[in-house]
Image (cartoon, rainbow, N blue to C red; front, side, top):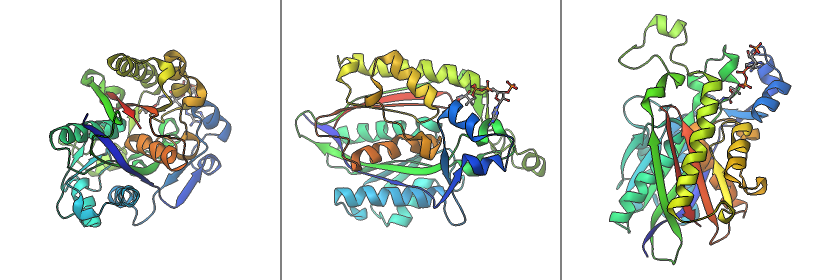
Length: 327
Ligand code: COA
């Protein structure tokens, strides 16, 4: 049966590490508060020259190297991001340029922290039509560029990173993407958003002064919706494949908060040893969080052929979604 398989994965982070102790010197917070409320200990923060497209390119290059595929063989590049290098061109086009992927077409998906799951879903649909196509699905963010470093409610949460997966078609038994599930609810946009920078509230001196190009969030409300939506869409994916929670070998939820991940796994009845968590070292990297975790699990040998992997994302919009994969 023809399915979309992941031929290679890759990840990239900036050089600089910002610890909770470092944050204590920036805002009124403490390592203790951040660790116990979120599970985060440190995060990577970009410096000069590191951008969403350069991180995405590095992650993509690593996924191509793993797969033994040349940039010129890539047919399509999809980048999930909320922090593009520029409004135009799209980040995918810049990745195409940096990689030298001269035969690919490229575009971005704007679905906040669900960006990678959306990108992978679109890639899956294209591969189903053209199994020989090779597609890069990427999640890449420089959230540090849209973080209000004076707002302790949000600045302790986020980090910069990129992750990529190279996919194509295969007839290798049961291997590959089994199902994809996407949802949105635009009625809830005001719980997690960036007020300025678009046509409603264009860039201005006033906007910059109020730091209205930065992320604003009602943390408690987001928390409740995240737990509910992540649980429901994971259950939907299990039901669609007639699988039970104990069939899942590795559950990779969006790394937003250790308490959210723990609660969702409890509700799903997936045991903690089968939940992948690396938020301690990265913080919330939005669309990059799932592909970075997938790459870590892949490179560390945690994933074995035939394993059942469940990706589960939630983000601003709201957007949420799940992908069930037979590794
Ligand atoms: N350091 C110290 N104190 C802080 C703080 C910080 N960085 N941020 C907030 N506080 C304070 C608050 O001011 C509040 O003080 P008060 O009780 O005196 O008013 C107290 O800590 C509790 O704040 P609260 O917002 O209720 O904490 P919480 O337990 O809900 O945790 C979040 C806050 C943001 C960690 C949590 O709500 C969360 O993770 N939400 C989801 C966020 C998310 O996942 N976003 C992205 C989705 S993709």
